[in-house]
Image 1 (cartoon, rainbow, N blue to C red):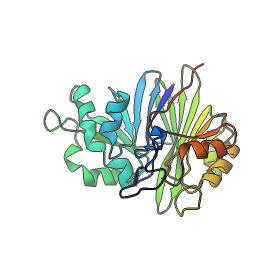
Image 2: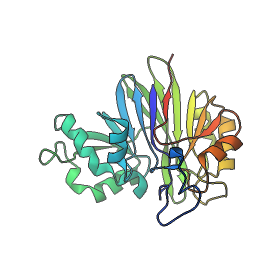
Image 3: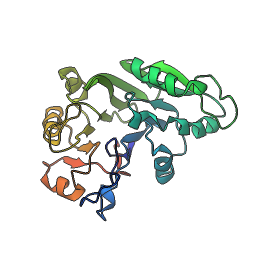
Image 4: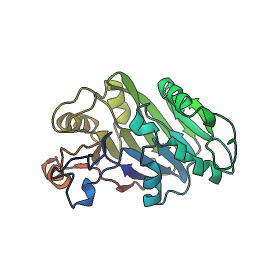
Length: 261
């Protein structure tokens, strides 16, 4: 299994508009953070999780050339507003609709923003087409399974996702955009080989885990490797990395995590 961190930043991105703080003006490329999303390759199946405003640029940068299915963690703008650029992958699929899985609120928001794309085939070549499906608690695929669990995120709920590859048995957990990780989600994540977890900023936030809260959750889950994502301009990559416990690190755009048997 391979996981590509397409974006590791907050809803505003880093550098922040009209900000000359040390992180926003840093020369360290790891401090240039597009909005948070990932691309997972599981026994050859290519799964895109969320589509940020920079989705097209992320795909070009990381040479993403195929998507088999799309998972939307929740309905917020920084995760959904790049979905129109999925049109290219519908072309590559031969004009077939792309399967899109999400929560009921996520699917409703897709219908509201992209009514022209809710169809079995694109209206014409070069258009998007989405086949909307509610995300089950367990999505069984020939290449493995994707488990989902709901995570509280302010007045929304985010899909926490657990990928288990069939051939290798490797387990990867993606818990972004959450204020808490409930006991059931902790239990589902245990035994993970790698974890990517929301860790917004040093100080508390009403709908995201702070860095200290994320570290506490990471210790409960116990994955040998954890990366914090959805980072703001309040944290410099190198300084944050130096202050985190062993086995926990900040994610950065373009990070590739390979889990092999």
